[in-house]
Image (cartoon, rainbow, N blue to C red; front, side, top):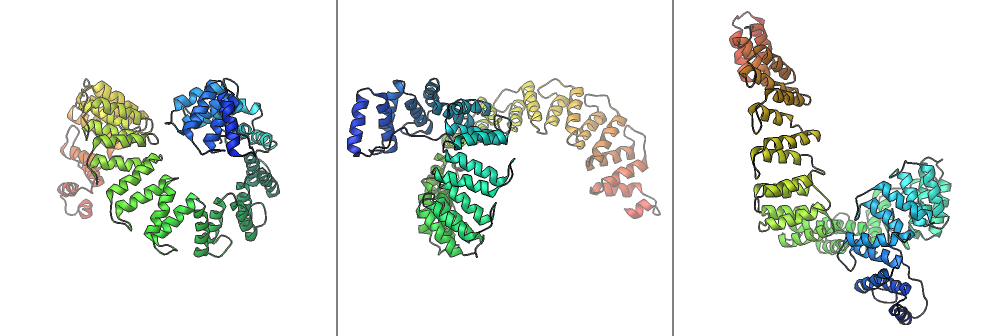
Length: 585
């Protein structure tokens, strides 16, 4: 799914200084096209050095003058946080101005925003609506996006035939990605006859339209023998061809030698190709070389070299920063340095890695390697929250317990409610707060409300509600309600029947009834509750609320034999030394 930026700046062969001077002159005279082009020049470094702040100025001027492409460009700067802080509200404001003019590229981008939930709630049907508006105007990128939506069944009923129709409309305009998608469909045989030749035709067309990745796909076809005869030499040739502009193809060659896929396993050769890819900045290759340098696998161990590669990779990805953090945290090849570890975890967290943010937050919360600091802990849990709503539970517990922050039941409940989006157990935590009066006034009615929400989310809490009604804890004592909820609990665990048995045996909220108690204890015992079986044995042995029955007592004691007291009880009952029961004991 594409929503990437497209330049509207033209290719000019004149001297850069002369060209930028002409564009500036026109822009300063109020030419909106020139203002937008000048913004693009500063954004892309065309004719001039990249300068996002100047790009922002000129895009803003042109956008204010109603230039739709400048409005879209301004939206993207705010959406990506280029030259300004990321501001999705501001991004959507400018995007809407562009779509109100019927600008196809802006309509396509609005679809992308709905598809990804950027600045709006994720809505696949709404995404399709905007993609279609742009596609109907003939925008090939939007036509390709429509093909992807029908292919995946997102926002529309899945239909491969319709998907192919949209891809072909884009491919007919020379849109390389649509050509690749058509090749992939024919290669997989998804709703069409599997045809390697047809796949090859579309991949070749994608290459002709500038897609070096298509050469990588052809290389894979030859490597794996997918749709065409397997040919390792041809595979490597196509990978090398692809690598001229798509260095990722070098990783494909490296993996062939690493795994022995069509060639003899050759670690040295694999590493040579990984190094070639790493030198061209391919993240996966850099990480592979860095780990092997650190661990001495297939290469001479060189921690300094590993750190150099990890630092290079950390510029583009959070995983490398986490690897560095762990090395300093654990002393893996370097002296333990908590401050250095926290620095790299922070780098990873700022790149959007929630696990790194969690790691920092926990350390500040617990004072593990750093001074205990609740404020810092909550700050980093909040960073993690952007990708992982589970962090809200941790913040809630800190406020509930006053762990590093001022105790606040109100704040705790607020954060638990946020956590509920992905963590149904948060409802249990809220319920227990109201039940026990932890940071909030005791409120049985509110506690039961949240226990019921937890039960709807599949958490085994009916017995908690039952106990509240049984004991009159925060709510009026109500045996009928207690028994109702114990029965709900029994649907998942039949041993909960013993709780009803105790109520009838002891007369807790109900009239004492030995026969009723026995009925429920039997259900629990048969569900695996040995304690219930032992109680049944005692009731029959002593005639508690029921007629004395030694045979029944022995039967239930035997069922609970794993308890030592049951063995003693059986000996006491089986007094006849010739008894078979005695011999069994």
